[in-house]
Image 1 (cartoon, rainbow, N blue to C red):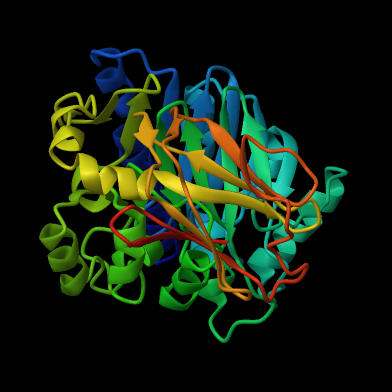
Image 2 (tube, helix red, strand yellow):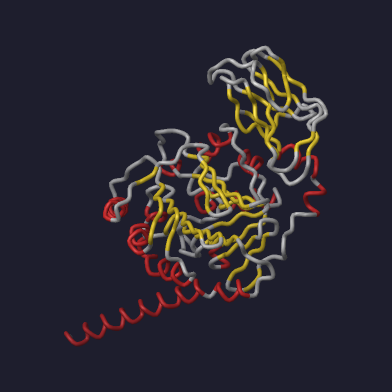
Length: 407
């Protein structure tokens, strides 16, 4: 009987090693698909298959960051994947929020690699998983950095802007999720953690740019996230859904699948494709998986031409209002020149309105509208138009009278 138990233990151990090896082989097999890609991947975003969890690696020519780190049981899979991709240092690691399926192996990552900054929301958890991350961070001589809304971090030639969380207290831990928008030249990517509709609504009201080519669907494709209003602001062409095959939660939910389909958003799922890698040279986007190239090269041409008027509405935003110097900064976030003639800028409290003359704004360009003593690119007048308080927001309308940006 004793020998039988011994054999049983050995058999179970061998089975676990076999299954673990299969998972490692499946995840690392993506590399061969990347070699067959037809564009230079100066930016690589790896949506790593860690089952019902999140782990995303971003590489920009030798500069690396990790968003979330799967479950505790994903330690070997995740560490092997990072090492197989030549990762030695991570400039940033982000634990979007303290749930185990997002920070489970974060302590192991911090221990194993050279780390620049550890970004975490300002919320604690009583779980051993969270305590392990805290302990390992301190042991490495690091501390948590709580990012501020609108704060921008650089990663090589790319950069990301913090969009959430916007409050200090939430009923649901998911809404504490750090949400970022990553930009590389003409392309943009949104990473939402498990942020739900409440956080999405707050993000919309920040007035920050949300338009993104690729959305990492919130909360593994749950109907509690990816609200219609949020999707209308983000306008993604692609949605990556990170979820486990035949998971107990029914992710992605039927409502979300129907919602994405209705809005023409192409879904790519880790439960169906395994690890998904997005490659971009800053203009084109391509996705690959273990099965090869998922979609044809997307060069952002025909679709944008067909929807040029709608694109214009989404591109122009109020970047900043300096109410002391009486300067408003307007930015063209798109890749086409836009004529602002007929656009209207409104100081809400005083109900004072500026109508733009014929002026062109180039892609990526920021122009300033001045009122008062400071000189801007365009002069509203010498009279002060802004109340020096948060009670006087600014609104920007296009030439059709549609509200396109608030600050």
